[in-house]
Length: 147
Image 1 (cartoon, rainbow, N blue to C red):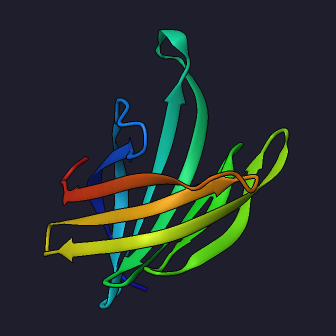
Image 2: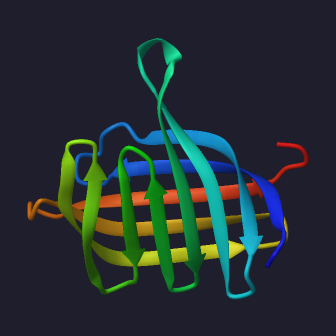
């Protein structure tokens, strides 16, 4: 098993259809370098009004030059597979029931060096058979000692 390197993860999520305010989040995580890909792990916390943490989601993202797989575990969970030119169906798990979901990947970008890297996902998302909406997700990481 590869060593886990402590990293600072930055997430930028944009709804390319509406051009609305992007979501920006930074949190500590770990990175495992697996020669042709990386495994990035972090925990997202969505805050309620007043800054009180309400939901925690464990995220694992395995990415390489031409693919990415994101596993989200928590009250709202999902498995998303990103391969350019492919549409992958799965389910978005919520406390209120599962919703059918489809991800159509436009592009996957992946760069890294010894202490930092970036994963860019350009995809379209459909929930419950609705119209696909374009999303852009950029995850960057930088080694930190300590985080």
